[in-house]
Amino acid sequence: MIKKSTFYEIRFVRYCIVGIITLVLYVCIFVLLRDFFSTPLVVTIFFAYGVAAVVRFILHRSWVFDRKNVIVHMQTVRYIVMLLASYALSSVSAIILTEVYSPPSIVVGFFSAVLSSIFAYLVSLLWVFR
Image 1 (cartoon, rainbow, N blue to C red):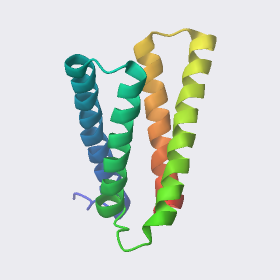
Image 2: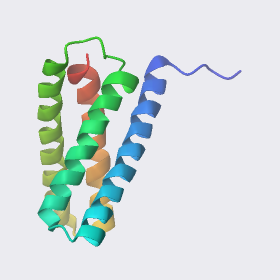
Image 3: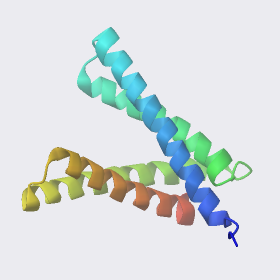
């Protein structure tokens, strides 16, 4: 007998779908700005990350966590704090992993992305969109 998906499993799958959508959006903006407009790297990263973060917030709020009826300003502040903490966790984990083990860059990138994504999901679930 196949078990029905639980509410949290469905929510996690939706979270992953939003992550894939915003990753594609980020890469498209990145390539467009760098290759077609020769935008400086720092500006490109800032703009692509900013647009992806806004889209991610809207999709998380309205579809993943279904909290569109809650006052938006507190969620926005919490979301920004979560983004900054997730970025810091990703950066620190990448630095430590590189300094201690010296693995290939793809391993560092993958590990830090997975770690910060799990952290962001849990913080979003338990604090940002509660």
